[in-house]
Amino acid sequence: MKKALLSAIGFLSFLTIEAQEQTPIQQDLRRHNLEITYGGPALCYFGEGESYNKKYSLSGLYEDQEYATGAIVIGVQYNYLLKKWLSVGVDVSWGLVQAEISPGYAFRQSAWDEGTTLYQNIISVMPSVRARWLHTRITPSWGFFSMYSKASAGAYLSVGNYKSTQVKPAWETVFLGWTLGSETIYAFEEVGYGTCYLVRLGLGFNF
Amino acid sequence: MKKIIFAFLFAVVFVSCDPHYGKDYFSPTYVSTPLKEYMLCISNDIVTESLKELESALKMDKEGTMAKYFYQTNESTLAADGSVWTVKREGTLKDATIAKVAGEQAWTIVFDGEYAFRGNKFDTQFTLKAAAVDPSAVDHRDWNVEIVGNRTEDDGYTCTFNHIDAPINYRAVHESESSWNAFGFLEMKVDKNGTQVDALIMELRGGVGSASIVRY
Image (cartoon, rainbow over all chains, first blue to last red; front, side):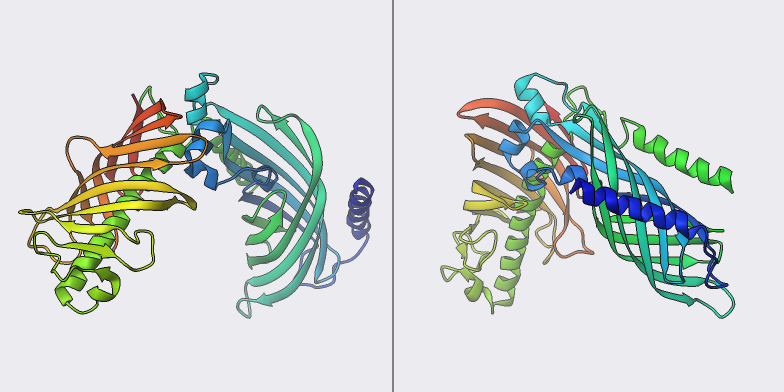
């Protein structure tokens, strides 16, 4: 599994470097783009046995030690255009998972202060491949609308006072992403599933 | 442009890192969100479902056509003293009884069965008295609610809940046929294997989720 992941990361990184040598395919598409992203939740933590429904039972409230309260992820992504429909890039993101000591548990055990905030930072690096399957002008003279899908794979570092420090594989699949804007600046939104987010939005800059 | 981007990033990180972000330290006996959400299942789900059922029964009684299909009606109008209707239709309050309170524009709803809080079904009993604030109002109206009940869950946990002294005032949201804003106090005590482990009071302040909760 690790070998496969490392091979994938290596291959995607190679593509990114190799792509620098190429020339742009289409006049209306810039070669580089940089995106600032905001999304969540960081599913790598919510997927580890955190049960939403247990909050609504007394045993969940008074026996469980803690519960996660939020997990936002912000990041920066660089993409390089290989072909009109294909980009490769690197996605670097930082996520913050917050958790609180379960109020009933803290009260019953007199162990920790109720409401004590626990946190975990998640820093991920994921090379990515993006396939654009629609790219059209909004008006004859201005603006573009694009739709794409994307796959990323890499690793994340988890560090904080919530759980022990560790490095784990990270991956993300974007089923549907869309961008709307001009040649130089655009807004985008992505819906996907993976380690780091379900929904992500942000601003992108072409140059 | 770069400055704007960095300022935006900094603002997002700053807000996210604030440990007090989104919290409401209104009291030294502050109780955080999950217990509040649990108690809101009583004040919102149980009471609101009961009021919806009551208003539905009163409407059908007034229109005089459909009631027999949804309620066991003991052949009496729900407006008459002594009338007791039983909910026949499938739903959260199946088999609950609705009884007219003699001499008042009020009804008592009694439920004994499994009731789900966000999918968690446990044995629940409650008696709820709903008195019309304005007896002349029709269909969707304001109610004064008195509720006493208990719930038996797994791992030896039980809770009792009740209004405190004055009834809880449920004011109809007339844009919605099934919404009320609640004002008043609700008490809940939690036991494990017969020993009390917690006691809480919630102040309801109107809209959905607008409430404070303290431990005493």
